[in-house]
Amino acid sequence: MLPIDQPVRLAKRTSNLFRARQGPPAATLDVSALSGVISIDPVGLTADVLGMTTYEDLVDATLPHGLMPLVVPQLKTITLGGAVTGLGIESSSFRNGMPHESVLELDILTGDGEVVCAAPTGEHAALFRGFPNSYGTLGYALRLRIELQRVAPFVEITHELVSTAEGLGSRLAELAVSRSVDFLDGVVFSDHEHYVTSGVGVDHAPYVSDYTGMDIYYRSMQARRRDYLPIRDYLWRWDTDWYWCSRALGVQNPLVRRLVPKKYLRSDIYGAIIRFDRNHGLSRRLDELRGKPPREVIVQDVEVPVGRLAEFLEFFHREIGIEPIWVCPLRQRNPGVTWDLYPLEPETVYVNLGFWSSVERLPGAPDGSRNRQIEEVVADLHGRKSLYSTAFYDEQTFWATYNGAAYSALKKEYDPRGRFADLYEKCVRGR
Image 1 (cartoon, one colour):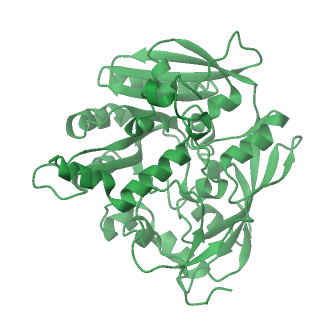
Image 2: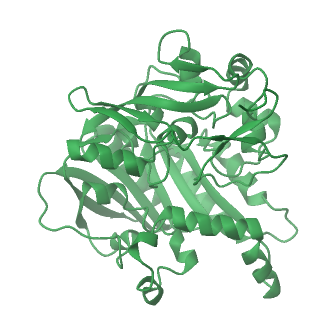
Image 3: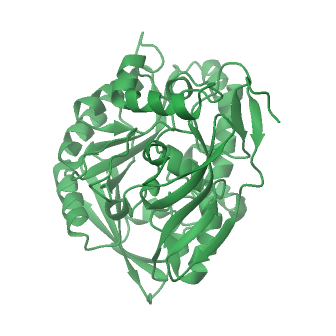
């Protein structure tokens, strides 16, 4: 039993968050038993799942039934509860929105120690609408009932080269609105090399590729127009190399890659290495010894309306210069629902852009200056920014962006003693 006046956080083996924790230690809540798939209904197309279940385990339970969640975030150790409270996106999001949009109900452990069942209607409907983007500051998901969809055993992939940012936006919008494919995302390699990647489920494949060993998925789109993957390999096509971020650890070098067992080519291993380095400052000290200038880490995902995509990319190439960039179209699944802490224009096609690297600091500029610049441009373009990584908003701007009024009401009702850090403290100040 944890003291009633002591702050609380989850004790987790893995994390897909990229912001350092500061402030006094909090009591940790053991959630090791809250992992697993309770049941799957292959007729009703639903599953009851514990909140700490990773998508890797969830997919392994649903695929034997020919089913998958409506949205499967791209990294294996993202948990279902984490994706719902912290948002998630992948190549089915142009059809199905984000993971929270396929939740039918969920049991939530609130700050006052009670468990409530939140659903679209009923006593806790406001918590249901406000839970996405609350990042565990209103409560923790213990059990979720989610919708599933039927899925073919293989995915036929088409990589389409587009030379301009305007053409990229037009093609993504066209496919997102027509819904003529099952999966849709892309990669920006430079200001003149963009790839739109679409996928269609098929029952048979003339061959299948393997990107879990020596071959690297993102490089394949520059070499071939068409490809085939088993559905499980398609869902985890980005995980083997953490998109392209594994290159920073040297494992895209063929000589190194041959020496690394396949079981270690996965995002959670890379993430653990990066967090160790961040916590101990090894790379920073090595750069200082080599006389290299300090660097600013930029690990972000943002959404901008597809009509403003070219404007954002023009700014990003000019001022930031990180490449490649992941692009993934997103459209709210049900235009009639408002998700209070992360509202999107319901009829608008957005494009998520993911960029994960570091850049040299500008002379005389403080750490975080480029991240602040990105936040300002995203706001100017009527976009949104995910909070899984660092954020630099002042408090007034933050609450104006993420609906402080609705959040305050929910916080007062479901965590009146402040057992959990509030959203600004957690996501900006790192508490």
